Image (tube, rainbow, N blue to C red; front, side):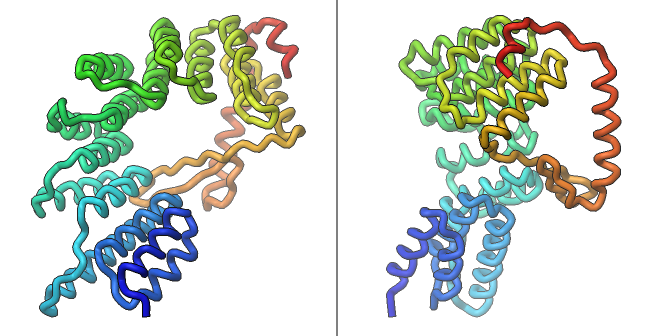
Length: 340
């Protein structure tokens, strides 16, 4: 019979390899579990996108520990590693109330606010829209103890919620603190520029990224194209798109062109760009949205018709689409039209 260390090593290996079915099997067969077992399984669920399962496991862990205490045993109580994973699940689900309860639990149990926990809290509050609480946690961490991850969390959180100026101001404080930015930092800043319409700043950040020897990725180019397109700088957009070195089967160039046409209100050309992508077999990873309505989460993907209110939703979308088509097309340079 393998000992607990061996069971944990096997479980952790499957979880880190994202083989969740195998990890579940090992977890179910374990004759006993400690905090390492529970933490590995919860983290594996989070890494595989099974955030609700992760939270359900955490509740099971807490209940099992409580029963064990009542029976005179110790029980496996969550540690900081467990809590980081749980906060990650809350962040990805946008479950602010659960995240707040976890934060209260951390304080009540006397957890020291180490950097990983602080970063997870900032990320959770920011992704759930509680910017004030994210900043409270952020400023409670001594600046000399910070790293690029926690700065990225707050800069990105401000950017997503349209607080472009504040995002840039935090970045300036980051530089003063002597923390070197990375590719994610600049992606967050470019996202802030998109939301704030900061064209000059976007170019400045993009050039700084390259000047520091960091390599711009498709996402950086996409943000730059977005901010330029929204500002109507279509010739600059075209210049950026031409310089992007993408593989032929990469969805970024097609989607970029489609978005350019959409910004210019050329709906037919935008649709054609997507059609060309489909005809060439280029696959786009489907995005999804979750909306909290009446205390329940509704999950949507593109062309999704599984929701019970799909008929009404698509009637409204068709009405919006008709109104968009009825509006006058803005002009767009001919050299852009030649690329679809």
